[in-house]
Amino acid sequence: MSEKKSTAGLASIIGASSVGTLIEWYDFYIFGSLATIISTQFFPKDNPTAAFLSTLATFAAGFVVRPFGALFFGRLGDLIGRKYTFMVTLVLMGGATFAIGCVPGYETIGFFAPLLVLVLRLLQGLALGGEYGGAATYVAEHAPANEKGFWTSWIQITATAGLFISLAVILITQSSLGKEKFEDWGWRVPFWVSIIMVYVSVLIRKNMHESPLFAKAKAEGKTSANPLKESFGNKYNFKYVLLALFGATMGQGVIWYTGQFYAQTFLLKICNIDFQQANTLLIIALMMGTPFFVFFGWLSDKIGRKGIMLTGMLLGVLCYRPIYEKIYQTANIKSKEEITAKTTEEVKRALVEGTADSLITTTVTKEFTDGTKYKEVKKVTVLADASKEAPKPDVVKTVKLNEGDKWTMIWMVFIQLIFVTMAYGPIAAFLVEMFPVKIRYTSMSLPYHIGNGVFGGLMPAIATYLVSKAKDANDAAEKAGQAVVNAQPYLEGLKYPMLIAGICFVIGLLYIKEKKGGVE
Image (cartoon, rainbow, N blue to C red):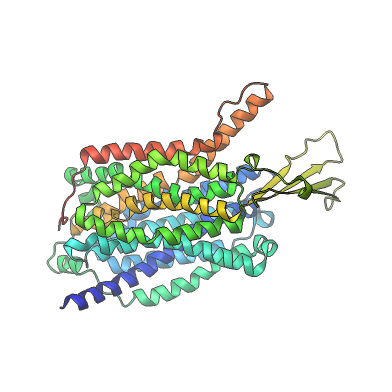
């Protein structure tokens, strides 16, 4: 077979593998991309912060079960083959995603709404737990030994591409329907769209052939009769499972979710950037950063994978605080000069339907000399019965950045994406090379999904909780007439990824030795 024909064949294999993996990431991340809106649909609205944290916890639940999906589907993949296993995961993921778009809201079915969404989210997590290991293993087992980093890095792109497409579909749907219709029912459309993409992917994948290395091992009777026992009951192999987790995937997971998902949460919830603008600048940064997955995958074939991945982690530890401080101050209207002549305030009072209570809505708009615009909508419920405790005021703040500040934000996210691509681009090849063919699917899937699913997936929820806790401590101190406890509460969430990435860097540096070319 000529090199040209071999390359064309590999490209076809990667295309078929990647399209399914991309859709599974799209399905998985559409929930996180819509977290701010979903929190108002499936949870009580009387405490927006608690509803948002509950949504992030539900989002994180899908990550927590990913290791169980890795065990279940990894075992199937090592027993019956790579191809059929990730066909099943694709259908399971697509069905669960479509169903989330059909679940009635909290106001319609009450507690059953978040319960159903949680169940479907768990199914998504199980499906993704089996998908990634299968796709990465499948591609790696087709690739030449000295080019595994380059070819598997295309699979790595699918995670970011899935997030990119989820954001693009959300923005297109919102622009088409308008903000009110989108927040009412239009947010369901991105969930429904996935079923079409899944159908197309199934048609593509059903024509794929089994991995040649697995087919050869199966023909020679060298597959494992008990992949779980051989992966985790074998002391030698289990050592590498632990090293893969604590010396690579754990740190890579928090770097990935900080640079993409927490960046989005930070822009929307802490900096109060306009929804459309925040997601647009994130999309631009993703487009700029995505090619570097392939670059660092290719580079890892030349100079090794470990050094590139650990450098990405170390840069995150050293640079996150200054990067997020810059993001926060760029959006901070307190540091901008207000054009007082353009400040407006509108107050509306209306009766709450079916009660004698009143709802007072105050809308304040401001403009600043640098072109930044600010809008604050505050809703206060005044109860007719003064003896009852009124609900907390609902305050929504929106900052729309000028063009210069918008590009500052894009570059701040882009820099983080470089860390992401360094840590993530080479890791599929790195994991594949650590384990033999007969237990590869199982052995690599578990540390990957614990590192990404548990340590990485919990990152947005833990970071948001730490910021909320720091703000509450400051508020309590101010009420007591004391000095604030923390001058930068908005940076508290970064402690988690910096700690995890730092520990992983040290373990990886001291204890991991690369297996060049891998093991068969």
